[in-house]
Image (cartoon, rainbow over all chains, first blue to last red; front, side):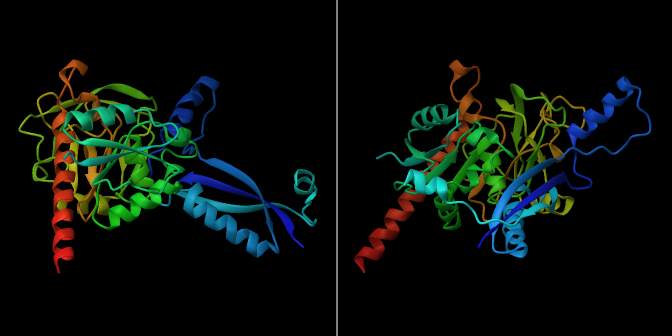
Length: 99
Length: 252
């Protein structure tokens, strides 16, 4: 029986890496009259559902995906986060209908 | 017989036809290599052209990296085959780890489509990618990219410079090397004004500007044609060597 796990991967520019988007957001703050906010870094968040026997196996898949594809280790770091686990057998009804 | 030079076509490539034209103009026989096919069709050199492979989703070049043709290109490169990435092709090579560094969002955030000037790095004028570039300096050719800011850590940059692996830098009209920040001659803010590099073995190179789009006077500049000719001639030499090797092996 397989369980579905909902994961998120948060990818951010590594410290010291130029982040022109973060700079642009920061430069816009005076227009809103906001003060005291600095060091804005813009990254991306990727969410996914993973079917696996247990959380460790699901996490290993997400780690591989994150390190090989979602983040470029030269310039970005990432953090894997478990959002939700739903204990349910994955439905094969769609396949059966199509088959 | 003219040498067969491959041009990889990804969904979203848009300089593949310019590249095949320039290869033909330089006396080579261009061979289009579709991204879903791993067969390199016996080419003696491969160019990854400009464009927006797979829409540049996630990061420019990263999804293309995992296509079937790129596994073959990586094996070809590991075997000493000549590979050149132009613009998006450079981004693909960097994401695949076939050349060092990464291409970040342009420092000014904007997509840039205009002419820039580059110069062959002194000491890098005798490579398979540059040997027919001639004494012209600077070379004027277009850029068209949103993520072209060359980045590597300081240790890598030092090693690239010490090893003669920086091929091109952005320069001003007078030929002097552009600065990193607030210098319009360095269009994207590349570190140390680096416009092109090659790998440690010397057979894989990438650059952001487009020599193939400056390969005929009718295009406004033919300053890039020497680079295209360098690559085609080097591929021809590699093919001739391979033939000789095959004959020798066959004779034994």
